[in-house]
Image (cartoon, rainbow, N blue to C red; front, side):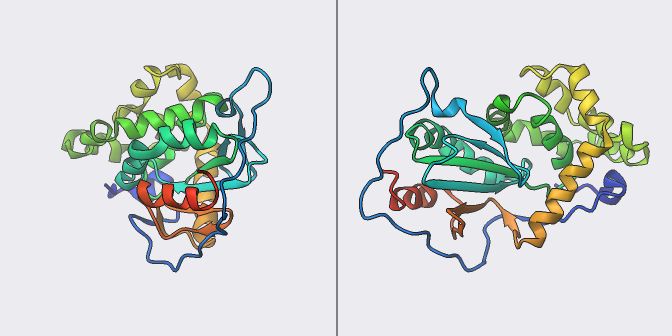
Length: 249
């Protein structure tokens, strides 16, 4: 799913391209809990799923900020393995594990393909509360969203955007790939989306984070960490087992 015009699309952005798939890195086992951790009540009038914050590491976190179990996911919005993980487990993570107050979940969008740039800008263009629902929608509709990449006419339009000025490039790319309309149907108005995409600093920030994550040793997506320990799993059954072993049971 790489465009031939990667360099042109990114211009000066230093994008660290990584693989979408399972990592062969050695993983550390997070500390296990001999018994289930107690649930933690949410603030009055709220559920923990209503508590969403941007983090200093470029991610967005949902749930109890002081949760004893901290899940970090490095995911690409154009990665089919990440989509499968989300389709299988995202609802359960939020409803069961985040909802208990024992787990918080931080998603860090790791751009590994050119289309990750406008997608990441767009999921961050709305309010922080809309971030996880928008990511969920991208993954739920993953096959349809990516089918356009098989259309040579669409690809030609996408590649042609690499010759445009930075403040036009990602506006045109998102339009060519159908992203602008997709987000408009989910509450991000076309004018709002175009304003975000026309700001070169937002695209540069996504690329800079990709470089930062790559320098930290993230080499594949999804990469999952639990309480700072990198898990050797990339699918939902393994992740749920790790959450339960850590005390979310």
